[in-house]
Image (cartoon, rainbow, N blue to C red; front, side, top):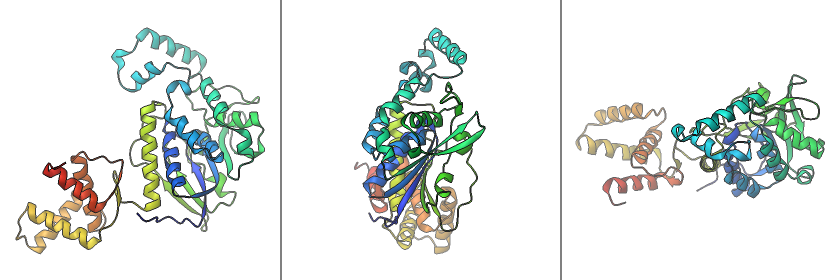
Length: 361
């Protein structure tokens, strides 16, 4: 494969809020790191702030361990088994008395107790590494007391303030809120779920936004003409923002990694990750053969084009012949139950589909 990304530049990273979907960002970070993308700053909102702290520490391994070992009780004071059954739809297996008393306690307390999250931040974040890092960290949260969003430079905070503001940024509305430094805060997504503004306002010109599509307000911001923002974003559902199930987190990590690779190598496909090796002419010839074999080897050119046009509309493709070919190839690969968490060449995936359909594999 050939890198299609401009590696001569240094990038700032915007990490969107999205709760349990945060593993996706770490997977994308792995793709960036593997390929040598240089990072000079990171801004995070909600879970993006915690991931951003790990990025400022340049501790990719620590971030991967954190999400690989993630479970509900590492964020909230809850029973993992009960929460897994709840999010897994296994309602008949849940102890009704236990869940009922838990709900009453949560309502009485004003939300889920996030003491475990505070402890997770305290044990995962190294203040000195952030303070002395060459990668600048900006944290977005919302001050309920002052009724305004905050964009904080982490290197200006003391150790207690840093941990408090990382917690404040992640104060999801369903969580129990407590005063931090005498003030009340809530999730950064309330006023700035996609933290581009801390980076744009400070003059960063090359920005990679790693999206989670979490709940919140996307702060309106004018992007200067000399500033370029590109996105790594999921094309598939990442699940509930409160589903801190380990299996779900590991899946999202993999999706983040491959979507990161999609950006860096300009991979084709919607669900699959396809490295283009065929020309549009070659894709057209494959489509011709497919239609002719299915319909009539002696099909007229006009009828052939009409049938390819029908295939284009049926596949939802609005591009050229290559795009139609890829859309149909993905559908065939999905029907053949070929794994979508891998990178294939277009010719390689076609060969795999044909072998599957022939029963050879």
